Image (cartoon, rainbow, N blue to C red):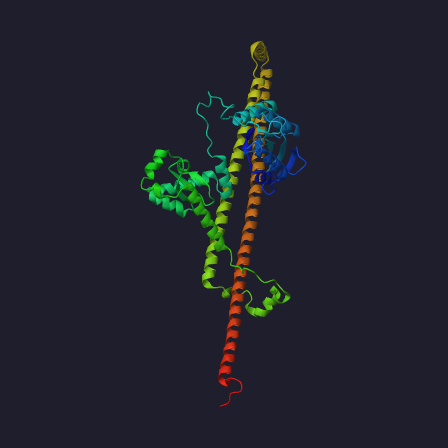
Length: 492
């Protein structure tokens, strides 16, 4: 069982995250010590924190058991109770929200840290130790498999080195936003590094891939992604600081932007791309009247309505290039989702096979123990078989029959599991493919609608220019006629 969390502010963002129905199959508020919704509740709890001159008035934690164990409501309540006591938050108002995703459940618990009687914040010191003590206690109570930890759950004889995660929670969140796993991102950066002979060429390759090299506050070099996330270059390449400095020796660190400046530059580039992707619109578009409705405009423009050839070639090429880039980005996203699903399926299959192999091995050992007679019982059985050879042959036949039955049963179970896994694999893949095809259809429809909108705007602009030109010609003829006739009352 994994318990993660800590003190925080941001009540609105936290409430929105807990109530998200788009990323969860089911969201259920199990407990709320307030008559209001979560947004108002968390806001009130954070406001109370201001009276203590503190900034983090909420304590948010996530309790996530292994997917193999199905928790009852009583067990969830017990988990909250044990963790609350370990954290020293007894008596504090709390809210408990359950999320279910892909059939797997976990809960979020949020406590009010402000103690109303003393108007102080409940201490959050050594909270990681408290998390692991609660996790260990709950695993023992519920009979769950032990999950090693870094602090209270660490066995220093088996874990002499302090365990470090392959990716931090922030890196995992960044990977979710970018639709690119941490492993895939690091593989991409490592591949760029392999193709470069020096730091300058590596810097150029990173910029071409959408990253920006910057100088870090605590590290020599950091990377800033297109989404604005800051990554340690040494951690991404799995290189020591001295190795990074040696490889990047030809890059002037002082000439690089700071991490904050790089984030601002990436944000500006993203805004520029968004503006280029947005078609220009009038500051005050006129209200649609029956005379200017789309049907009327279509009749007014005649057969030229939505004529693709009316689109300016430069605009058409720009649209084609941007739509190609967006389609490629969607394809990369789909490929990343496919790899993620395949990796998850492979890990699930391996775990199931290992579990089944352990059960089968235990069954074989049990049958072997049952058939093996020792001591006086074995001596008597051997004596009886010597006196009656037919009896011994029957016993051997019975033992062989039992082994054949066990092997056949285990073979069937392996085949059944393989068939079930293949069906599940095919269903998940088909569901993913259908979702990808639907997204591609939606993207294609959006591209077509966008091109039609641009074409209509170009046609309206051309029609407006034609009418202005006609008005100008009429006005020019009228001026010429006035010049020819001269002022009124003047005769030749």
